[in-house]
Image 1: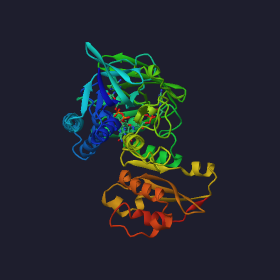
Image 2: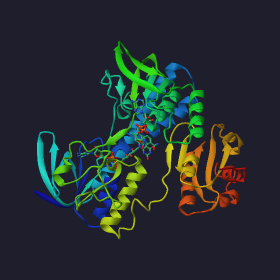
Image 3: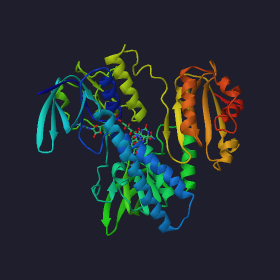
Image 4: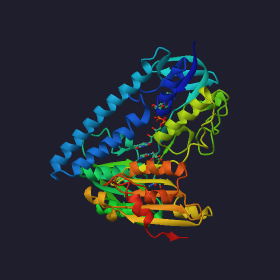
Length: 458
Ligand SMILES: Cc1cc2nc3c(=O)[nH]c(=O)nc-3n(C[C@H](O)[C@H](O)[C@H](O)COP(=O)(O)OP(=O)(O)OC[C@H]3O[C@@H](n4cnc5c(N)ncnc54)[C@H](O)[C@@H]3O)c2cc1C
Ligand SMILES: NC(=O)c1ccc[n+]([C@@H]2O[C@H](COP(=O)([O-])OP(=O)(O)OC[C@H]3O[C@@H](n4cnc5c(N)ncnc54)[C@H](O)[C@@H]3O)[C@@H](O)[C@H]2O)c1
């Protein structure tokens, strides 16, 4: 049986980065990946990179001719371009590990035999390999609602829909979270008629209510129908369409569509890993239970990324790699407790980014807050970019003047939020943003006006 210093299950964001770091440190490494179309993991192949390539292409398309045949051609061309982008990224990722002398990329599906042995199933073949240390980076899997008709060929997960080269003229999206809203926004830009069915009271669960409403109004103004309190009951196949039957606010709706996207969340992918064989425990939500160093309940096994059941973002999977590398190769200083504030961004148009707490969360935590709001109509750069949709909203601790959280629903929000992260982590007072000299015209300079306004104190 072949022996390695380390074995990594999954060639994802965290697995790739850790494989390279261990190799640099002179370790022999086996990286087991179940699919030859997934080198680099979800981000590269089915998630961030392909979807953001489509979001960009969709924006360009929306600003061009509205002729249906042209929209369809542009959509097909965008899918082809996206395929080129992800294929190139996948190859770069593959070679970044496979070309190293002390790394072996093993094609097959891994499961634990015990703490030091993995069974790898590859087509007809199966074999075992042994390693001193094991690292789980098996990602997450999309959840589908458990309703009649969900297995119709016209119902897709996000992984599947981006492989469809024919623009669905009518698209129903089940779920008003990250995937649901990004796809709703992008397919609208491509020219589809989109309806979002959201189970709860509002889209963007957990976000500030005022900002979530502003996002909803903007999506609706672009033609997206958003139905909240929707309970999807079944999906019937009908010739070249499906009929989605849902109770909306208690009333039955029958909604025709050429395609349905199921976007109701993703669950940690622990299927078939046989974690028990290695004494690895799950937490109450089905993620691999880990401590702040990402150590599992087995002494020589760590877990990183979506499989740990935390927030699902590429930059967190990447930071998990830093934490594990710090534990295994460094001084163990970096942990999940000291990684600082974590921004997130939903790539609708304009993008909506948030960091830290909402005003309501801050008050519930006992802070006296000052809340500053600036509509995008007051930002010169927004008018130059011809998109004055949205707002900035900052929550500041009235006692310390520190920024506790910020909502950015405006052009360049995905960039602005990274500056706010540094401000928050470095504990820079809000007054600095009020008077700092920023380049002009820029979205950042709006922070001067935001913090010069009259706050609401609570
Ligand atoms: C549509 C969509 C868009 C997204 N957009 C963004 C975004 O814009 N920004 C952002 O930060 N995040 C985004 N995310 C989330 C992000 O993609 C994930 O959080 C991130 O990719 C998780 O990385 P990971 O390292 O945990 O695992 P992954 O990158 O998912 O890697 C897991 C790998 O393990 C392999 N594997 C699984 N089980 C086994 C096994 N038993 N044996 C061998 N191999 C196995 C899989 O094939 C896969 O390659 C998006 C997600 C989706 C679905
Ligand atoms: N830009 C980004 O960073 C980005 C983009 C896409 C995905 N992601 C990651 O991928 C993960 C998965 O995204 P997602 O959108 O699938 O999950 P999500 O958890 O963000 O949203 C799921 C939504 O579906 C709703 N829902 C649940 N069950 C439902 C049902 N039966 N009917 C109707 N609505 C229902 C929920 O209320 C929620 O609003 C996210 O947690 C996110 O971390 C990130």
